[in-house]
Length: 58
Image 1 (tube, one colour):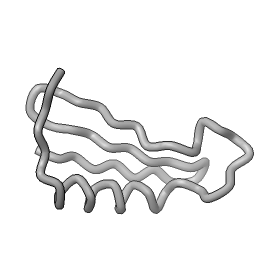
Image 2 (cartoon, rainbow, N blue to C red):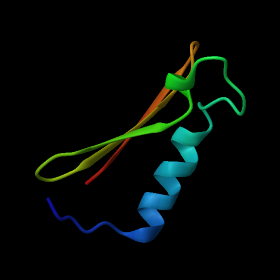
Image 3 (cartoon, helix red, strand yellow):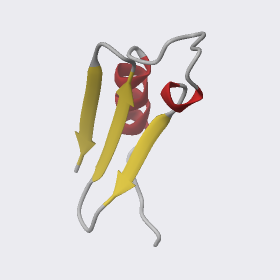
Image 4 (cartoon, one colour):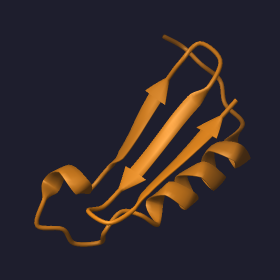
């Protein structure tokens, strides 16, 4: 799959979901950002054990 996304929109979304990711975590599953690509949008998801932040880029 190939997609194009506006750099500023992508950076803004990464910054927002990155706030939910702990700097140091005993659980390695909580140390990344999930990026899901669909036909017309991207979903970025960042989470720790307490909060989840999700951003959608059209």
